Image (cartoon, rainbow, N blue to C red):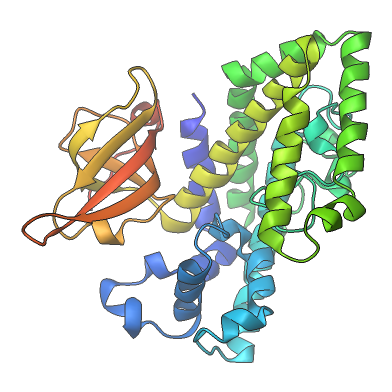
Length: 369
């Protein structure tokens, strides 16, 4: 499985000046006495955004592009946004932008390993979908510039060492880890399935995929979106997602298999090269957290539910990766949902749902809090 290479890549990135300067201001990296009402400066501002727009910024690797838009939103300023000096903000956000550029180059390079790249036939890459729009989306988009940048010919992601401020030994570690991770991704069942689905496309299937892209481009044009909702970003985003899924559902045979295989490969890259990689890079080794009431909703599925005793639950965050202590689970778990309830004793209980990262016990060193 790909987890050892992810760890090695994150470990190399974490030693670079750009990562260290950005990570030092993240709220979760502050001491408990420096959080909440005691937070000041950039950490206080980031803490405010995490609360005000929960879920919009999925990863600190995306702060470089997401946060300037939030800073420009006058509505957020009216809700008590903490003040940060111009020089402090400019210095930090410029580093965050360099970090995001390095990550986008890396993610694009992994994407370029997909069969058929850059001439991918996936309807998801039609103009205006959640995968390509420049409006609000939870996806890291596949831009035209990325597809035309020649990443498929590069031996490693370009400009990463320069953007991160890495020295030559660290650059070599980064490049070696990238190539190892690319090799492991290429051997995964999801990647192999996409390769097979691409090879199985006959002329009718290719024509069906082409027609689906044309339909999506027409249905997601600015005029059509404005007819649905001219101003509000959330309904426009929902319309894009619903329309894209509607067209994919209408496909048949090899064309449907290909489109579904592309979605699976896209999700795999999102989990491995964005979510998990970003967590390890920006926050370091996972905490070991005691868990209770472990339950698996569906036997054989990599989804678990659990609670946490004591005071640890409230400070755990969605997206965070933990080692589940005092449980039969050996692998790390990525927290995906969090909720609270109050017992009859008025004690708060924290409930979580998470994804088990199968194989991490063999690829990562366990860490204690």
